[in-house]
Length: 243
Image (cartoon, rainbow, N blue to C red; front, side, top):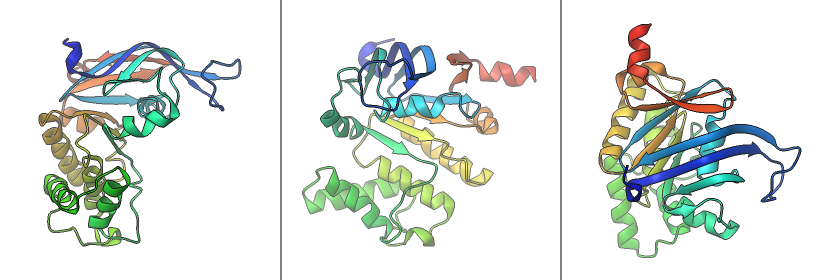
């Protein structure tokens, strides 16, 4: 695989739960995952599956530097996770988008200003550029006519689309989604997955953790199984055909 096309590269990585900010592994740190080797290229959709507590969310947190990488080599969106300093973390996160299951929208402002405030906080200056970009991401997310709706006036699916629009504001190279369809009905989840496919087709890599095997069967893509402290790429279509 062409390394220049890789948005994520993990080699011989071990991931630990740690209570401190030390860059060294301590005796009381809990090993979560070991021997992690993973590459994700631009435009790829990759699923993380596995039981609760198997390390999916911890690996996602490592990719956006909420959990420190203490062992192995890791690069995300061109940045070295082992050499990352605290002041570098905002720069890393501007190169990616993060979609949470619980939305984390600001309830006291409408959809437009949920996006506007993020853009101001991440360094956008020109009002015309801000408004143009908001119009673009709302259109991609299918919310062009919802800009001035308050979050409570949006359905669950529309709120998730707004979260996705927020994640796309800075034209990320990577989108991380932690159980993004977990609270949605099947029809709405189907719409979110179609949107993810469109985003991936534009060149943005997507890593999505999920328990929804029906969605994986309907929208097949590379699938990484988390089990017993290891990760393994599996052939989901073969697994389904054998059931």
